[in-house]
Amino acid sequence: MKNGLKKWRFLPLFAAMAFILSGCGEPFLSTLQPAGEVAQKQFNLMMLSVAIMVLVIIVVAIVYVIAITKFRRSKLGDDFIPKQVEGSHRLEVIWTVIPIILLLILAVPTVALTFELGDQSGMEAEDEEGNREALVIDVRANLYWWEFAYPDQGVVTAQDLVVPTDQNVYFNVIASDVKHSFWIPAVGGKIDTNVDNMNTFYLNFDGEKAEEANNLFYGKCAELCGPSHALMDFKVQTMSQEDFDGWIAAMQESAESEQDFENDTVADGFAVFEEQGCIGCHAVDPTQQIGSSAGPNLTNFGERSYTAGILDNEDSDEVHAENIQNWIRNADVLKPGNTMGGYNEDDLSDEDLDALTEYLMSLKVYSE
Image (tube, rainbow, N blue to C red; front, side, top):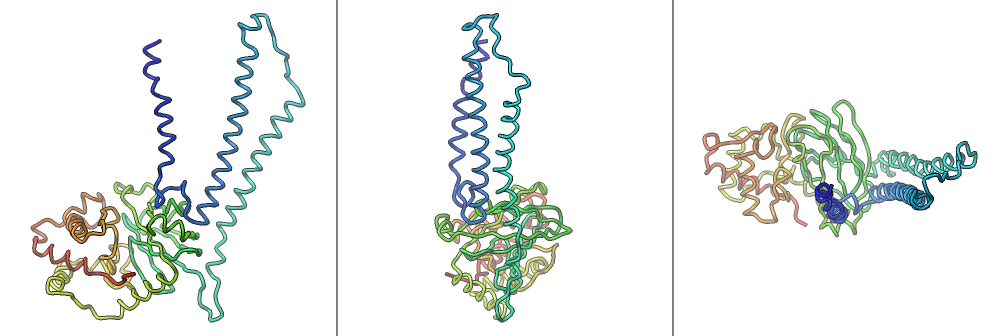
């Protein structure tokens, strides 16, 4: 008996540690630190449900403690029989009405918020000139990367979603291959990306909370989709409306300008990019969508904070270059199941790899 108790003596400690650690989330990822209007409303609803559950637990615990202390056998004797209340009309009304009230307290705001967040009418609102007022982004989920298209602006990018703060941003989400789920934990709940139909919803990115997260949030695929499901990440860059307009303008201008190489190494890298067939899957034009079976658009690849959504570039050109080469050599190892595979030295020499890396790092269109 004592040995059995010893095995469990650390359970309260581990439970307390788990409870404490649950409050250690980062502002760029934690659902418990809402960074937008939608996330805040969902958080408030969650806290309401938690409060109701805690209230029920407290009441049940109090009744339980009273029962086991007031009616102890050692205190009242073996022959004591408490008052029998079977069939009490009053008690039956109480324990029927109270749960109904608690359910209504939770159900009414839940249904109301469901309809509120499901209202997409703002997506089609137009100004006097007939232009859509809201920002709409088409999201396409692929194994194992994300494409983001801005249809009204004629811009396409991948892996790094760029959005303005303090306004509703509407999303049309769909999948190319299998079901995925689009989720930015700190900004709002997830929504499924299906192959056969498009889902729509909106999020709002709070400017002050975004600054606390260094204007970078993490996004995830929240639906098991394959061996690299856990690695199907993307990043969300937030900025003011003015900066966002500048980013859009820079992307649009880069599509119209002729390709200008910084040096011969970059030019050689572009030649490798063409010779190896990379250009068949990866566009370097921000207005071009190659298709659902292709790879990510690389127009602003040199500006991205993460390579392939998982390798942190650490704001360092040296680390960025290492990440690119690691990815090209070992793509099938870093993200098992992805369609790119890896390039060994027989496929791509070290010299060509260095040139290709220089070219990819030169793909930049916007600096704040």
